[in-house]
Figure (cartoon, rainbow, N blue to C red):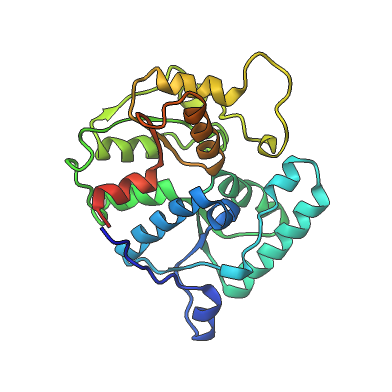
Length: 264
């Protein structure tokens, strides 16, 4: 089926017309620049458009949250980036921010308030689960009924912000075949990329963390490893390739699974 083109509203354009959308969709560095995660951002935009949600993106005005800088120890760079973003939020009167990256969500929600940000921050899984529970987003339970899924809990979604219910609630509406890894929820193993580890060489050891976590996912015999974080997607995709399982096991973001179910 030919991909449908979606017009993405830009905050500056709406502001020039005197309009203020309900939500700012924060795309994030991965959603903007990573080829694989661009597909996740596109999937979420399709859902927002399908739901006729009032939203906009910052486009060229969006920069990094400063999270990688802070995790790597460059506090001055973090504060420069954060204060610049907060100023943009205030300029456009942004009150609600939706993120598709747990790292963006965590720093906006828990660390930006120290610098004066007062916008409500919503993770996209919270938003999607609410849309499903309210009946606005109707999932076809038969669309993915033959797919078995295991969910990898991102550290900054789960342990840092206690978001365990929403991803599983969504997945169980998509397919009856949801299986848990041995370590899940607050005991889940990191993908190996957090804390700026994504941007440095692995330290010496017997096995890299992403391989350990991939092996745990493969033991569930699920055909799909569902993720909700660009770092996790990158590491687990590499793990699937490392194990030569690309043909039998796929890695999809939950938003992508919803789009598959809705066929939009």
